[in-house]
Image 1 (cartoon, one colour):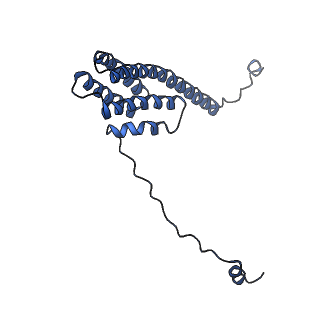
Image 2: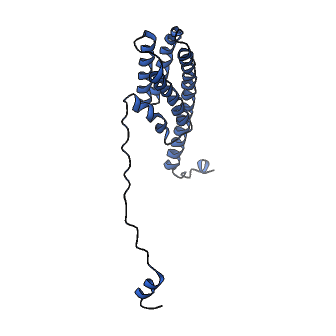
Image 3: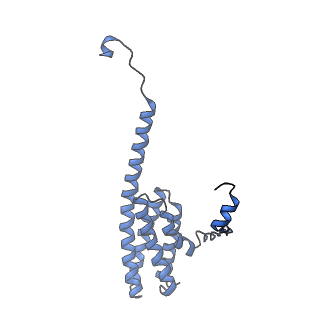
Length: 179
């Protein structure tokens, strides 16, 4: 009716448009993280399967060759999400698996455990990202420390305070001027 009569329409509320744009961007970001995370988790599951086979039977070294391409996809996905620590860990894991494949490093004992925990940590990290966990990096931290990507955090020092002196009822009564 305002348009037909020539009455000027009230101004468009830009703050509402900005809020809508922000909410849309957050929803799109969450969807991207979920979809990319699903692909990463699928790749990590295949990597874990190949590594499990190799760790159980060292003669299945030929399977490790397929893992390199899967790690490249995982690194690319983490780069898209700008998760640099996770991408760095994926690179280090791929290098260690390549060492297993070449025979430069035996894929057993501590070496096998560190790689298995690193791959598992990446999977848990992705789940945390998908769920919007604020402390997803905490899951990744042990693997980052084992590969030297991160430093072990300094322990929090406890501050000892003197406990307040305990007073008897009689001492409190003496101290107060009136009962």
